Length: 475
Image (cartoon, rainbow, N blue to C red; front, side, top):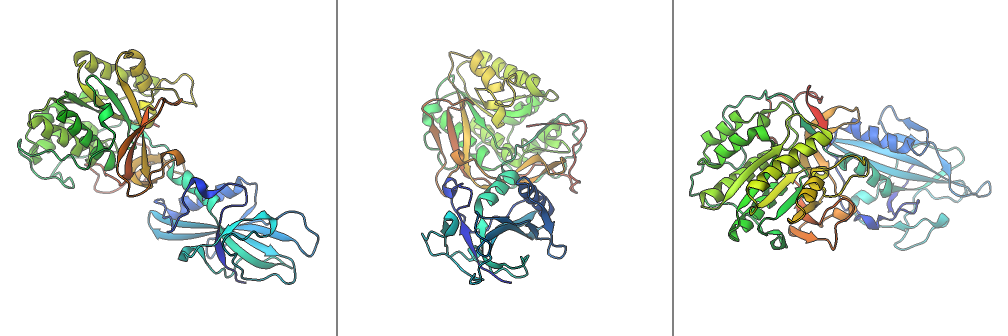
């Protein structure tokens, strides 16, 4: 039995206008068994019985009738999920709806024309991309019915994308430093001298409005990317060009402040970098979560070079080593407020996770008070601005819970929410809102397509994903 596939806008009234119709296959950066586990869960949530082909490992659901028709002219549908392993942590999952007709003149292969309106108020779009058309062979049969057509269920695939790539990252607090430092290699790193010019990179449009004396800018860090540290470095360059004293606050435990200060006043050689990593146990944790990536090291180097050029540049380690929840938020805010009290005129750029930098609240816990909210409350006369991030679908290095509730620190796909989606190839920029929303964000920093920045130090062999005691994960 064979049939032909086309793309669908979906039969449940969920339009694809909220996300561009893909022109290439989406490859998920998760093992195939995890992707199929989530796909099965999505179908089971519709209260459907799911069956597996033991040979191909394809999933198919029980069938259901479309509408109510007289016997002899009925239409049934069912799901078919086709897996494909692209690599050890790369998978491709296609979800189809197969349509069967009971009428004697049902055709096995039929593709609707553009804009045509078919039976049962199903609206189809016909595209010419190769992946949009697929011949079905050896699909589940229905006695007395013929396969009429199959189509990609893009709304359901979008839900699968959200489950796999719109997952909160974990920040692992506590734990032990166990990775030895020897012969450090950082991509793009070369021994430096104090005269080295800062690498400011491409401009960030619209950032000038934020560069004010005594201002505090909080930026939601997606963790483990090249793009956020690069944009932050450019913002530091622009602030120093305006002759502002500048402070970069990074999500490193405050106990490592001495190590950061020493590196900031060094010559930036390989030996200086190695000493930073020896003094700071944070960069040598067994399980790293993206806050100690090579991108962060390059950002610190950008600050060092600006300082070496004679600019007033400081680095602030403001995070907690052990605290979690509100205790951690309070400690982070106290560290930043202490710096602000001593340096009221400095322009302060703070990089932390999405939840931490909100100047509003969170919907899931009325008692939780983010660091950003504490800062905005304590500094009513200062300019405190929080920026969410926008980007195009890409990847980052982060820790997440996998489908078996184990901590998995690796390169993961990351997909933005609809309101934060950026068109690929568009410039990075700051777009300020007319007014902050419930979360307290005042605008959005668009970063482009995200790419992963790995930890500057890694273990020689990758362990099985697990939570390293006594490290405690926080969203």
